[in-house]
Structure formats: structure tokens, C-alpha cells
Image 1 (cartoon, rainbow, N blue to C red):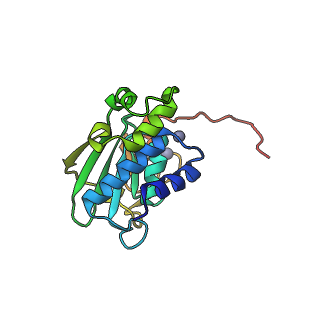
Image 2: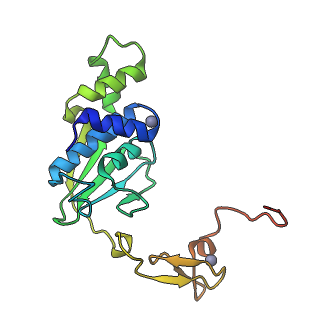
Image 3: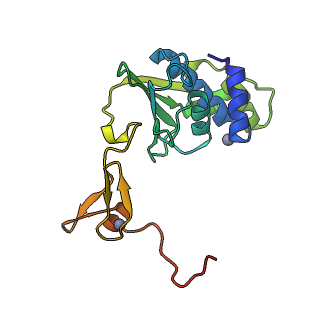
Length: 199
Ligand SMILES: [Zn+2]
Ligand SMILES: [Zn+2]
């Protein structure tokens, strides 16, 4: 396992800037990996880890960078809950931990690096050195990951009976007696512009 500084440097490069979220995400991932007994998440252990992130903000990029888990590999799932938390699962043992970044840490960061005047710069530096229990809540949890959410080949592919798009991984729904895609079942998140030439 690389050091905190090395991991932070890599995640900063991938994310595009250094920020408190990178520090939080790297530390969160390191704690989780240690607790789950995963030492080489991008190598030997790469099929063992599964992560559910509860926010789409800076720290999520750091978690991806440290663990190698990603949406595209289906080893990371994004839950749109707006909570700075993630659950890390060892698929081999079933052991799981949910780690939440504590809101109080913002205020408490004043006790560290008080010489730094800028609030955000101070938080960033403080988060590097604050003890884990002042930054995070760590819980042992259990959860069931549906087979259609796991990495691997799609369990199912069906064609929507309304729009003809193909739907993978059991995301099809029954709507007025038809097997349809979510766009057709729940309404589209976009509207089509007719007669628009894209050429
Ligand atoms: Zn950022
Ligand atoms: Zn459809």
C-alpha cells in the first residue's frame, strides 16, 4: 500500500486540484481498506472490493483513485443521497464498513493549523493531521448487493417495447403490461428537439 502522501498526490492529479475532499477521500479509503483487510486493491485484491458512495463530490474521485473501484467497472455504485459517506464491502468475506465524514470536523479544524487564516486552506491542512475519530464515524454494517448490481456480464438484456432501446441488468420495468425502459416507464429526463440537424 502506498503512503498517504503518495495517494494524495495521485488523487490530486486525477481530480485536477487539491482540496479538502481529496484528503477526506484518501483517508476514508485507507481506513476502509485496512479494516477490510484489502492491501492491494488495484492488483491482487482488485475483485474483492465494492463501494457504494453516497455523494457525487470531490471525495468520490479520491476514493476511486485510491481503490481503483469505478462506475465503469461496476465496482462502485453511486447513491444520490447527498451524504459525505461511503460503504466499503469486501465481497470475499462479506465484511462491510460505512464511513461518514463528520460535519463537526469543519469547526474542529480550527484547533489545528490555527496559523492558517483562510478557512478552506486550514481545513485542508487540518484534515491531514486530525485523528480519525474527529474526522469520521466508522460503522460496521451488513448489506445485500443485488446480483444485477455486481461486476460481470449483464444478467439480462431486453428491448423496450415502447422505444426499442435495449435495457441491461434488470433495469427494465413492467408498465401497462409492457416490458419497458425507465425513460418510458417514469418519464424522460430530457425532451427531444424535433427537426434539429446535428450534422
Ligand atoms: Zn475537489
Ligand atoms: Zn423505452
